[in-house]
Length: 150
Image (tube, rainbow, N blue to C red; front, side, top):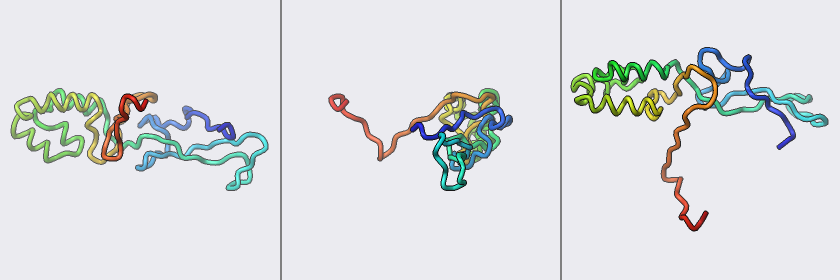
């Protein structure tokens, strides 16, 4: 801590189409250039600059606003699920008028809260760069602390 400085992504580092750091990979990592403090030299390049992997959100062309609008207006026909890459659920919604409109309502809520994303695991393309929704999930490796353990 304090031995190097990695500047916040600037306009040149942000992709204008995806609003994410340029070079974001499927592993949700992007490389940015960092600068070491005076007196330190990096072993890789023998100077003060080096690259570091930082977290980002990999996108694959799915727009959040498009998915939400499709769910609101055409969700009863399963078009939203087809768009996101879930054809089996799309066919089921098409044949049942969106599970009698209840499934459409559930999908609107899931897409609006970003709990339902594209099938390929990518993130939505949002029309801005900055804070976004981070979905927190728990599994068998996570647990809750008892009240007296705090």
